[in-house]
Amino acid sequence: MPRLLSPVSIQSVCPYCGNHIITVTTLVPGILTWLLCKGIFMAGCFMGCCFIPFCVDSLMDVRHTCPMCRQELFCCKCR
Image 1: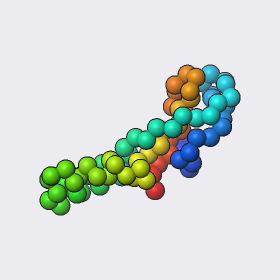
Image 2: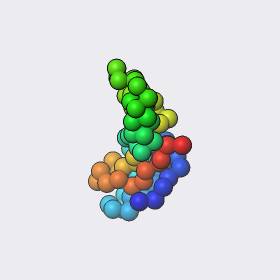
Image 3: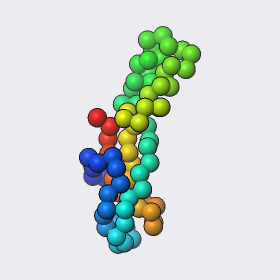
Image 4: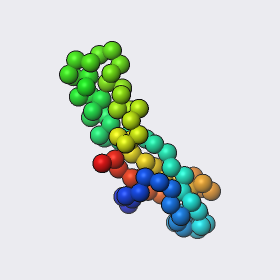
């Protein structure tokens, strides 16, 4: 799956259904989100503080999907 550097919707041609589309974006937890959660937990924050990375949009990956066929087209990794 190619890496796309845009966290916003883009206009594209879906390689699966061939339609001209504007991608639908969804925030999903990536490896950085999980590593930060685990690091905060291991640092002694047991009262739910370890879930803070899941609430910060800039720490999440952005999944681009086709609105017609619902196939995943690209994934923008968090910085």
